[in-house]
Image 1 (cartoon, rainbow, N blue to C red):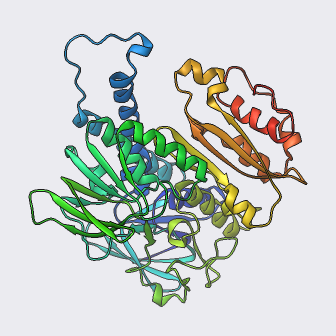
Image 2 (image 1 turned 90 degrees about the horizontal axis):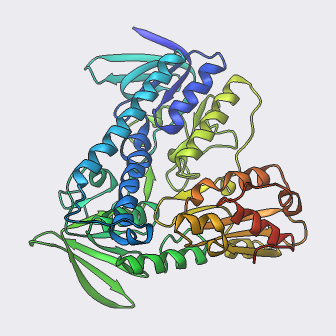
Image 3 (image 1 turned 180 degrees about the vertical axis):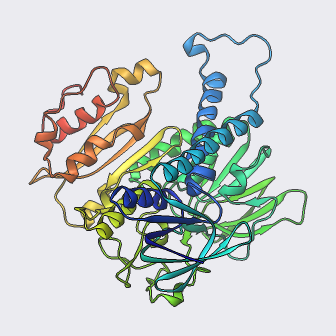
Length: 466
């Protein structure tokens, strides 16, 4: 039996399910195919459960390091049960996954539980989880197959050498861990595990942690992690991992010198690669880039006009909210609705370590390399009243603009809850507001957002509270 749809979405992660919903809203008959994680890595073993674990870790840190500051007296034994934190994270994730199925039903989207692969450019064969095989044809297809974890050369996933997936699904804790990679995943897990008493060592090949962020942000986080007792080794290469002994032995090198780290566990967090194998793409004519990603145009259309691709599989920007936005663009393009191309460098980025990191646009170095006459304003949270009330004045807001025209070029924030502070700036940038215009926006007092206001005032030449 063959079923036909206007749109079939392959992959039900953040990009895929959002694309399906938008297509259905626009009146297109829509189906979605997913073989494992409804809601994707994000909802199941990524963004959502990790935020639950991070919240637990924040509370643990508060009670173990700052209780006296808030007048909290702990008499007797205070215990922190990571097993219960793990269970809470799974409950949170499971609830969000149920929400995805609810949205599919609400919008009349047909679900296929299984692995889809192309027979030709208009046909998918779905090997169902129930053992049945189905054939689905379509007018348009949206590829949203995500990405898979990169591993260090010569290594494999084992009980003691893991990726984010095995670690987030682990109910127990090691006494010590080496984390290879200091991007978002690496620094977030470092904070969680350190808060629960795990001895954490981060090894980063590049010369600073969170290396894609502004240099001042990297330096601020490095100082904080040092105070927390997290060992950070930068400009350091992992040469080998040996599991033959009681401990995992990690040989690293820096400046031609080698040394060995020992830990109970190793977490590999060195990046992702687009998930393009096993889907029969060779039967479609879809082209790949030199990086092995699916090549798309500004409207997410592949080299085959009726096939679109969104999210991590395109390697444009491997973030859930980027995939969601791409899914909306793809669905609207298919339906002939009004839409807008995405400006990928200006999409916001968020890292939920402590202190949090948020950014969009160019770093200061990138802006100067591109020839902009860069103006910089920086406002510290030590001068923000709400931050003092919260008891957390770590970090700053740094905003860049073009000195001649006043256009926003980027923003780089580190501090309390800064991941909530970007929308004002990204909206202003998208609609070409100048710093003078943004400075007229009134902020409630006292709020953390006033730090953004002050930095904008600084760019306009009249910072008030510094």
